[in-house]
Image (cartoon, rainbow, N blue to C red; front, side, top):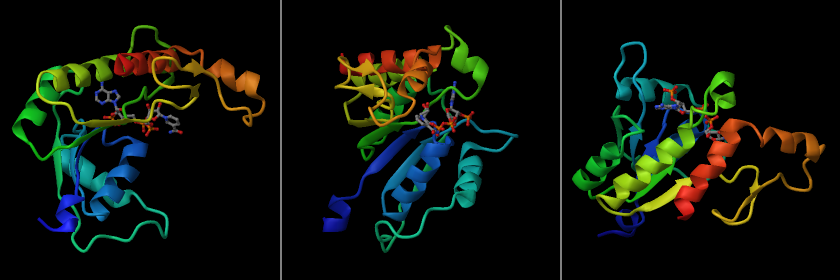
Length: 189
Ligand SMILES: NC(=O)c1ccc[n+]([C@@H]2O[C@H](COP(=O)([O-])OP(=O)(O)OC[C@H]3O[C@@H](n4cnc5c(N)ncnc54)[C@H](OP(=O)(O)O)[C@@H]3O)[C@@H](O)[C@H]2O)c1
């Protein structure tokens, strides 16, 4: 096995069509890592067509790490991200997947203000159960935005240099933010 092969990862990216994920996926492929993108097909297109088009439209900033001689391979899958079976099957059937990254998020104000939408806890619970039923891999999650401390013992407050901090901290009280903090507790457990 060459050094390049040894340092190559295969990321399973949850909610791969999100704004944040598109940058992550584009950079990972450029650096030679493989990516399996989980996203909902839209407008009758397949998941792979959707993600390929969105990646074409995503512009990376100049600089950064050098591109690998060979870009990574992109795969796409449209299975339900809220279903543990999705993760169980993908991890059991593809032993090369060694990382899971989650970029899921509430996408509109109604979802953000809903106490029953629970997108963060539902997704993280499904990922954890799917891994329990197949195998554990390293997991990356954006969730610590607006929290301090380690997951599970974290408090929701913004850093000192955020001004006016007390107003911005109110934003952390909305149901979507609170649900995101709850999802970190599932992970911590
Ligand atoms: N953008 C920021 O400035 C920022 C800052 C701090 C934290 N964050 C957090 O980082 C995460 C990613 O942010 P973002 O701005 O990149 O998110 P985004 O563009 O709003 O995308 C959220 C993604 O979640 C997916 N999703 C939501 N519900 C789903 C469901 N039931 N089934 C399948 N997919 C679902 C959406 O899929 P579709 O595309 O199919 O609708 C969308 O791709 C979010 O959790 C956000 O709260 C973002």
